Image (tube, rainbow, N blue to C red):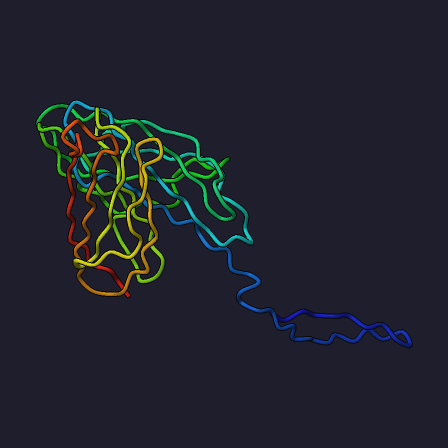
Amino acid sequence: MTASIRLRTFGLTLLASVVIAVSPAALAVTTPSTTLEVPNLIHAGVATTLVAEVTQPTGQGSPEGTVTFRTGYGATLDTAAVTSVAPGRSRATLSWTPPPEYSVPLLASFTPTGGTTPISSSPYSRPQITSAPVPVALRFAQELKAGPVTIDAVLGDGFGPGSVSFLVDGRGWTGSVQTVTGVASVVWDATPGLHTIVAQYSNSVNNSAGFAIQSGSSTQVVNVLP
């Protein structure tokens, strides 16, 4: 940045140029990024929760505004306000019930407070919708990058509290994780490349024969970016 300074001395006006160095980081404002987390398997006709995460550097505060949930064909599902859940991170949720035999890509767009148009949108999420009950489904961001990644196991409608074992490429690292309000969560230190994630669910209540009353699993192959 160059600034001009006028110096006045003995009736003469002198014009001098001064170069002021400003760090690019001091001028940069990072646009918030939006991700959409949808269960990989959804029971048609049963409500499921869509989760949109909006993040930006913590020094800029937590994002404030609304998230609009849409289909890939342009239809708007609904709009929800974001709520701060951590420094630099806000979340909006939507309860959505897909019609029977309905399959469509989904995305979420974030509009900041006072704005008139979205400034960031998530990648498309493409859940599989089935007519059969879903005991458990995996939920995480559509695009995964190397580093800590949160993985949720979401219980289906009518399946009771229990525990979930998480495996990546056939190996577990946390032991069984108890569900809380229908969700069990772990953090995976993801590495680049293709990986197979499995969530194995069993109900914590046993019948007279000693077997779990309810159980199920969900499997998803993911490609983690560097």
